[in-house]
Length: 264
Length: 236
Image (tube, rainbow over all chains, first blue to last red; front, side, top):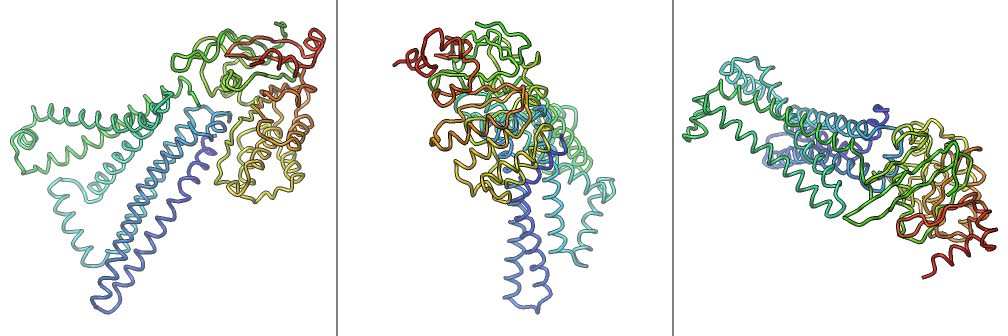
């Protein structure tokens, strides 16, 4: 059943997102082709416009994917369509899990497309050399491989986006459990959960700073010098924290759904 | 109240409170297999709330709802075919996609029956739902619901806001397509149209069951039609 639910969720969300992502790729290709044209101000401006458009469509696609996943969740679970969703013989937790997995998959698709678009637009001998040099410097200082560093950053990015999406779902589930002012409460619970966990992260950092001199210097003494080892540890800690928070938010939301729903 | 054996549905002292307002008060009744039951009452008296509780769309504040001795859940959803009073289909889909959706999720969905009923209505399966009128969407929903070979059909106001010709179509579709031996629970305030098909009636007023009897017994007891009894009981 999960596969079937996923099929419909993915289809609904990707219907619009693929348009944005396709336009993003088309503009990237046009931008790259324009780079091959004779050197002139006109082509430079045109190329810049195309590359700018490609990036905007890529980012809009990503934002749209997150928003559409929330809209899908609201429509399916609490609006008119919920009369069908909640009467198909599938558990509510499985329906929720399908939303989570589909969002995760769509975010990955968006990120891959944006990376592909960047590669199409900017990858040439000089950028490869520049990337290699800068990544080498970073990886040497952080004492990790280039691939490891790229993986860390990508994981951090995905973990944060998933956490934001989960907070949105959390807001929808708790906001719609009330009989009145559902949209306002959805926003309140959604933003509220994000802010509460962000404050918790800062508090945790402050506690770590008591025992870590480098972090203490940055947080309490206004130092702007970032130790590379500290930087590496921070990326790791934040990624773990986001994953942990997402797990907590998912668990609480799932528990709430298990207690039953109330549709208007 | 009549004591049923082999109850398919059982409500046991169900209360529902919304915003400190009691919507349902001590609702208890049973539905037997093979019966057509009319859930009758004026608008806003709690009929839809009872139906939503039955389908697991609401949770009771207290009391118990049992379907085949199970609380509303996956097992009950397998045997209940529910027609809500509002349009619940994803408008971005086509009729064909909706048929596939129902076939995939409901094992008892008979796609051949659905196709036949659609053909009778001259509905093209490739039509997108967002291009269909409200009336056609309602008919499509009815076709989907009645094409299931369910044990219980729950129809919430199927005759509300439709012209007499459509009412006839709806009643014909219901009567000629429900699975033999199954039960039907119809909620409505338009009694004259359906009273000929009812076996039992449940009158709901201000969240309470004020009468629950066999339709024939009621007619002979009061010596008038169910519609007339309803009008007398619910006189403003």
